[in-house]
Image (cartoon, rainbow over all chains, first blue to last red; front, side):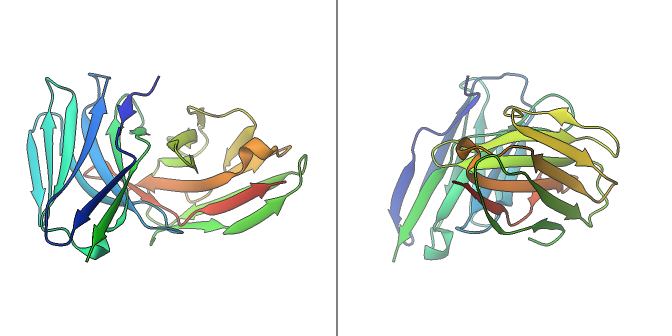
Length: 112
Length: 112
């Protein structure tokens, strides 16, 4: 049972345009949501997070939106840059010990 | 990825061989985690340790054992490797505050 779903395996956008990555979840007990970015041959790196009591969090070019009623969150990257090309993982925290449940990832390609 | 060191970076094993993946963190956090990443499967939790001396199973623990040697070190052992354990293994610890993780750079394991 996949509790965190990223239904788009890949996304391609032009440099300067907006990238929107989507994530759905099923467990209403998740209290924190995070996005990670991963380059090939490297470990994932933390990008941005949002508490379940918020609906938006912004950090520079990155904004995460949370719609609790729809159990949906999205990551917006504006403007997109070629260096943003990577796999993006959505993750959710629930339960004890700060365990994170990850989605399968979306490969973002930003074309110059 | 500063703070979490994994060794080795690459390993090829024959079916039935054993090996231990090492992980050490210098961020002085209690919680440590082992994940595996497979194509199309995202990151799945194998085992975690909430503090020195405690370990618990994650989503995919079968075929693995762990040891939390001290606060810094958390090792993952494959007693009898199988081709299904071919994967990239990531160790992580909590960043703190925003509830994110810091990941190591990974161990790419191939079992033939």
